[in-house]
Structures are given as structure tokens and as C-alpha cells.
Length: 534
Image (cartoon, rainbow, N blue to C red; front, side, top):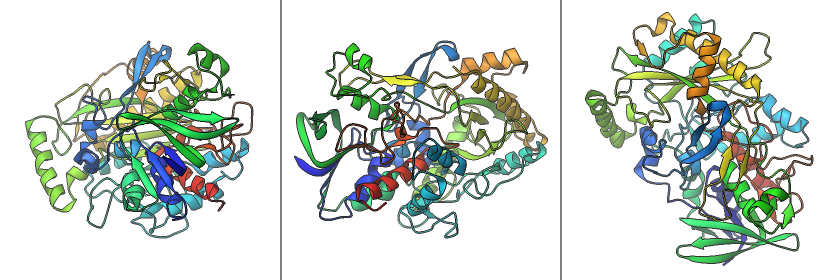
């Protein structure tokens, strides 16, 4: 098989690339995805993310685990990652968040020319089809439908009022001029057309409308082993298509979009990475690049959960499941109602201290009890609130378990290896506790799970005992100009022709928010670079 462009990974970035590059009928594009088709009911129905995220069973989910984490009492963290067309946009909470303008200006300050806020905003706008229409910060015509939530629970207003009682102002648009404040999240959900109420994954937004193009070939359930490199240039991808291993030739470029864990893993198997890591697994080096797999950053998450006195939130008991079943029937009829929920319906962006320049904490308020990624089930009606440190200082890495393409990577986020992260997390946890104990939430607030005395030692112990990811790993093929940079500002892998990395792994620093919208922005911008339009 031979194509102009071979894209490895049909996730949030890969779907965008496949759709944009195949707009030119003169080029041929091949997309390789390890998972399935991304159109099943678990993906389309927003509420069914609860069935996918736990990885029990593995529905559209790689269900990865970290190495034991010293900062978390030696526990192994759990990392759900999407394994289907659409990638993690097919199993996430659908929250549309861009981060802060300073995040991207900070990338430019690190030598990533062309990635400052004014340069990336047009690509956010190109992607976005926002129900709010057109203004300086929004667009209504892009492929990715961004909607107001159709049926947020009444408790979300109480959460906003509880924040006000804690001197936190309301914010109707986290992607507006200011991110700080409390309010409802906008979501990547179809708000009109035949798919109204369904999840608008990257595949649904970009790829599926392009699937009929004769110059676009999509292979699902395809395992990529490695990229072939000859005399400093990528020539092909070795992959198992169906039951046979094949060599898929790339006449122009290979675009690696396998995510913050998959992209460095494939580079390492291909002989591109730190010399010691390649030697450990007996891999012949094709190009020594020390930064591959380094610089892993993630948002560590800490949760408070409460039983609810009222039943207008989610419960996994007979009455709660009956309510969800009835809501599911309504959703099937017209795409509306409570089955369209993303669970994390509202939240806030706050400063951990008054002297902080911009928000360094994010809160997700969930209309159900969440414990251990839905792997520890509580049947009671209840609510949860999450807090994460937006710009962690801890840095981890991704390595190989072995050289087999079927093996999971070794993931070491090094959570809480920097004391600053623990200090900010403790400050955020205390703010979260103040909000959850505010009078506005009293009509719902029942018994708290995992209560403790809120002394410094007890809080630190509970964070180390229970905290885990909120699913935003980035940085393992970082963009930049220094010796640890893996790709340049054009996303070309340094020292190898015909190879780019296009996904969240290229972020030199983690952005201040959820990472799905920025990943699609990266791919929009990369498509223009590849086509010579930027």
C-alpha cells in the first residue's frame, strides 16, 4: 500500500488531520486506528461515558496503568484512553475548554514560534461550531459542535451560589475574556441536525463526514509496530492490518498522532529516542533523540464525594437507574433530557492564593458519586467535586515495557514529586471543602465519604491515598528548540525527514484546562503547516 500521507492514530488529532488533508483530491491519505469505529451507542450517548471510563470491561478504552507512584503511597494510577475512532474525545466528559491565553504565549517564550495566543486563536475558531455564534472569541460555523448543556441539574445553580458564598464570582463562559469564576461548562455535543444530543467526538465532527472521499482510506483495528527509517528519512509504517503485517509506504510524510503515551512508544520501538532506553530493549538506534518520552505532565485530581438528601442527582440504585432508563428513552426520541448529561456539568477556575496572577486550580462538579474512576461503586444518590492543579511542576516519563507492539507502555507521571504541587493541591482541597460545605448546598448535602479532620497532615495523607489523574497527559514529544525538544515549531521530528508528531504530546507545557479542544487546535494548525498554508 502506498499513500502520500500516513496518519498513525485516529484520535482527536488524527481525525482532524485525515479530514483536512483529504480535502485536497490530489493527495492520498491513509489513517490507521487500533480501535473500532466510534459510532456505537456507548460513544454516542453522553451518559454512557460512565460505562466506558472504568475499563471494566474495556469498552473503547486502552485502560492503562502507571508505574507505582512514590508520591501516591506506591499506588498504580489508572489512565483511561480512547481506543476507537475519535480517541479520547469518544470517551471523555465532552468539556470544551481552551485554557488561558498565557499558556500559549508561554509556549512562544520557550521558542515555539507561531504558537502564541494570537496565532492559535484562529485555529480554535476554525474548529468551533458554537451555538453562541460569532464574536471575537467564538465561531458558529466550524465542524466541532459546541453546545450549552440541554438539561443541567438544579444543583448546578446551588453550586454556583455556594461558590458565591465563598467569594467566587460567576462566569458564563470559561473560554471568554476571563477564565476565572464558577459556572456551567460548554460541551462538545450536537445541538442541531439528526444527531442532536449525541456526543460530537473528533470523529463525528471531522472524520465521518469525510469518509466517502475516494482519496481517504481508514483502517480500523490496525496495530502499528514501528516506523521505518532509511538514511534519515521515514519511508513507511509497519502495521498489522487485519491478520497480516503490511508495509504502508508514505510518499510524503508519516504523521504520528497516537497520543501522549502512544506516540513516544512508537518512536522508541522505531529506534528513535534516548540511547539508554533503546539499549535496554535491544532496539537498534536509528536516531538518538533524548527527549522522546520525557517531560510527561498531567493533571492530578482529588475528589470529595457526598451522599445527597435529594434524588434529583444520579444514583446507581433502583430508583436512580429507573430515572436514567426513562431519560434514555427521551434521549432516543429527541436527543434531550437528563441522559444527555456529561456528569461534570459545572465547575470553576480559581486562584490558590490572592497573590497568584491567574487561576491555578480547576474544579469539576459532578452530579453523581465518583470514586476510583467509577471502579468503586456507590449506589446512593450523591455528588462529587474534583480539584486539580492546572500547571504542575512535577515531570515524569514514558518508557517501554518491552519492544513488542502489543505491550502497554510504562507510564511514570511522577505525581507530587515536586512539593509545590502538593502545596497547591492542599490549598485547592480546602477551597473545595469550603464550597461543598456552604449553605447553598445544604438541601442536597448528606454524609461525606472519606471524611477527615482537615489538619495538614491528614489532608496530605488523604491526597496521597486517593488522588489520581483527571486524564490530561501531555508533553512526551515536546515542541521546542532546545536539546530536549523532540519536534520543532513545525512539528517535524528533529533530525528525521518526512516525520511529524501531531497530538497532545507536543505541548511543551500543560495548558490550564481540559486538553481535548487544544489537541484539535494543534491538528488544525498542523494541517495548514503540512499544506504550506501557514
